Length: 470
Image (cartoon, rainbow, N blue to C red):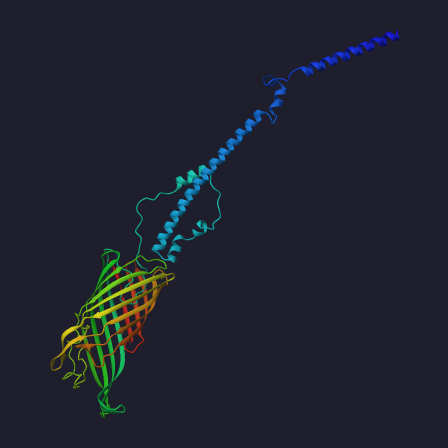
C-alpha cells in the first residue's frame, strides 16, 4: 500500500514538471507586443517614459529648435538696439561739435550739466532690452519739429579798452553809443634860444616851461549791422581843450613867471569805419576782424589857429612862438587799416589790435601868424603804427574786466620833403584797465582808464561810454 502511494506521487511530479516546461517554451516563442498594442495598459505607459524612444528624441529636438529661434530673435533685437545707439551717438557727437563751435568750453559744460557721467564712455554697461523694449524705445524717441534757432557766431563780449569793439552789431540792428573822455598831461620843457660857442657856453636865453594840457571830448557814435559779419560806424566828436603854459626866462633878472592860457573848442575830426568778421571762431580758436577807418579834418587844424609870432618862429623868434588858441582836429586826412583778434580760452579771452595809420600830405599850407598868413609849403606828418594786447575775464554774468597795454610809434614830420627841425620819432605807451557792467540786455556801461608810461603819452586818459542797442 505504501509502495503504490509513492508511485502515484512520482507520476504526479513528473506531469507537473512537463506542464511547466511547455508553458515556459510557449512564452519564449511568442513575439513582443506591437506599439499599437502597447498603447493599451501599463506596458504602454512604461515605453513612453523611455528617454531613448523616438517620440522623446523628436520632442526634445522641437524644443531645442524653439529655443534657438528665440535666441536668434533676441540677437536681432540686440543688433537693432546697437544700431539705434550708434545713430544716437553720432547725433550727440554732431551736437557736441556744433556747441563747441559756437560757445566756449565753460558755457558748454554749463549747458550739458552732469549728463557726461551718465552718457559718457566710462558709464556702466546696461543690459540689452528685448525686441519689445526696442520697439518701445524707438516709439518714444522724439522727433525734431520746426527749425532750430541760428547759431551765434559772434565773438565773446569783453570790456573794451580801445576804440575798436570786438563784438559786431547784429544784422539790421543799430547801436548808439555816447561817450565822454577826459585827458590830462603835464610836461616840463627847456627851450634854448641863442647859440653856443662851445657846448659849455651859451649866448642867449634859456626858457623853462611847464605845459599842462586838459582835454574833454564828447563823442556820439552810431553803428549799424549790414550783415552778421559786416558793420558800419560813424563817430562825431566835440572837443574842448585847454592849456596852461608857465614859463620863466633864465638869466634875464626876472623873478616872475609868464603864464599863457589858451583854449579851443568845436567839432573834432569826424570818422567812418567799416568792420568785417573773417571767420567763425570758438573755444581755443581765434576770431579775426578786419577794419578800415577814414578820418576827416572837419575840426579846426593847427594851421588855422593863430600863433604868437611876428615872423616865422623857426627863422626868427619874436614872441612866444605858442598858439593863442588850440586846434580841435589834426589837420590831415588819414586812412587806417587794422586787424582785431580774439582768442577765447576758458576762463579768459585774449585779444589784441594791429593797425597802421597813413596821414595824407597837405599841399600849399600857410601858417596863421599874428600879423597874417605865412606860406609854408607841403607838409607831411608822420604815420602811426599801433599794437595792443589785453586779456578779459568775466566776474559774473554782468561784470567783466580787461587789462591791456597799447604801444604806438609816430614818425617824423616833413616840410617840402625835408624833416622839420626838432621833429623826432615818438614812442607812446599806455597801460589800460577797463570794466563793463551790463545794465540790461540792451544797455551796457563801459569804463576805461589809460595811464601813460612814456614821457610823451598823456598822464591820464579816462573814457566812459554806454552803448545802447535798438
